[in-house]
Image 1 (cartoon, rainbow, N blue to C red):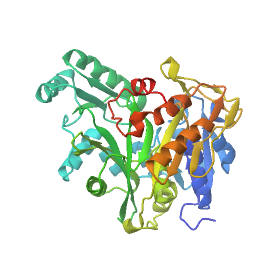
Image 2 (cartoon, rainbow, N blue to C red):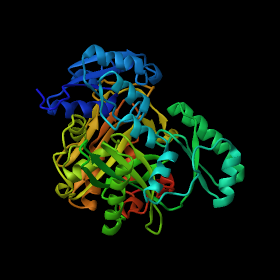
Image 3 (cartoon, helix red, strand yellow):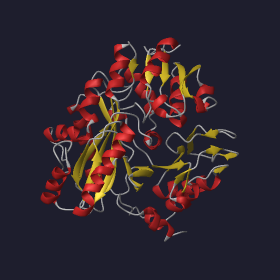
Image 4 (cartoon, rainbow, N blue to C red):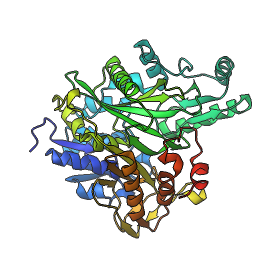
Length: 455
């Protein structure tokens, strides 16, 4: 039995992150309850959990976003906690409040904190009030295109239109001139509403040649806060992260320390608890600006785990149980370099169209310091209803160059048949001279970079 106050957890998610949470919970002696949609009935999280409940049909609105069904399953199972993973309801303050009202511990920050940072525009205002540099932007959600035009008139083009809620690159568009602005605003609003149920958007000044760097923080309920270093997430396609690494190949130690301190200040400013990520934009001159704070575990958390040796998901359970973090800032010692490649069920040759279907053959890469987070197995079915992410390959090396070579080798070994994937695309990307030299920025067209530079 677990020595923690949490004895049984409902995993309100699917795929690789659900399996990741189940494994961490079991190592802590916590019983696990998997929730699944009908197409996920035979998934690995269902097989690995102690018990499982179907919460609806395939479409996420009827299953993984169905709060009533999730809470009902939690109550029937007798669980005392819910881990939301990432995506779906992970950053929904209403869901966190519903969990609390039913006596179920939500593994993440509380309703008030999540509400305060759930709106990116509001979060920016809060951080600015506490001394963090923020990207110039509209003070809140815009009500009409006229407000967008006024902002662009003051700061000039290009401008970034961003969804006020959610993440994952949804609801984001860049307008390069006045002719594009109205269309970009309307498109971002529609995409935000479809993805998050909230159509609100706001505007920011757009920086060319910038990098996306984020800092992982952990805060216990006694107020002890630590930062676990940064992750560079600049390699993106359409604002969707492709490759993440730690440490950033471009930060010097002074900027690294200043960014870590800013992340801790931001967490303190909102009274944050549990695991969170403070995201920054680093401009061409090395100045960094607060972007947003994610109130959940991140897809890319494994790279931080490999360089620090700290299990972030276990730390989430420890904090949610009311226990102090078992380490302090002085115990955090990052070593070497880690890289993560996201493997998706999509076809790069057909504009990255999703490719659901049955996996007929699967060979996972292995060897020292290679980690694969996935819920795939030979014969499993990849349904069409969810995000196309199906695996994460994560490697560690004593140097960045060693990590790159190890990743290239691991991607060569990785075999998935039956569906199209972006494996070859990622292999080309990680071995390109642009990636090796650390010169890929958020606004680079990675398609041009790698297909014009294949090694």
